[in-house]
View (cartoon, rainbow, N blue to C red):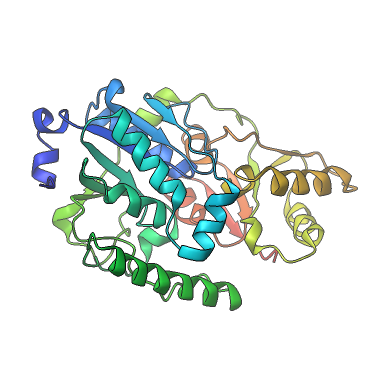
Length: 324
């Protein structure tokens, strides 16, 4: 039987479970830190998984890594399901007790974890644009045929989205109706979700006390978009971003760059060979901009990104620019 939010808020019930966090970008780590500290989740019951090499140093818990193989990619392409997710599910079933799952949406990796007999509850963590879209909960079924049909709808929507270079999905089955909670830090998140399931987290001191800022004194930060947004000539987009930046600025790469060494090295090669008459450098992967903004006001420059919302929430400015 799956737990509800009332059960979760009971410390005795909550601490019976392991807690599995899927963390794919800094904002999910930011919110996970608040959840862990606010609800006093024991470190020995926490499991951290990232598919994008996201830095999770401010979080306690055991890290689990399942590498993406060529067979995983082939399996995804042919069958749509995630073999990597199946391997992760089996690892968790061997490693931990009955677990609660925290994630951003029901992608194909998450579906495999939901299918586990040890899965006893799920909560969503606000992450990027998907949390602000007008999506209602969909009816979850642990049925392979139904799940395959859902993945087909997702794939069709993703192909259309890429073809049109759009930021809007026609696929809306992101959040299932069996989830017990929706954790957020923004008032406008999850607009069509029942308020009784939403949990607002606004004490950012948990993050500030754990994070050591690395950009004190560096006020201007360029935000590089996802590599899939870039056209064939990456050089043009990189130059456009740099043109907007004042001297002594830094650039923060999208998390997807760090999940693929070939893509990261391609960017690095282009960036290092550009003739720049400014002092511009790259941020390290462990820089969390959302946390940096808790220490001093920042000025961010970049294309459409969820950081537009978070910079305003955290007392900084964001200038939207076109680079692709």
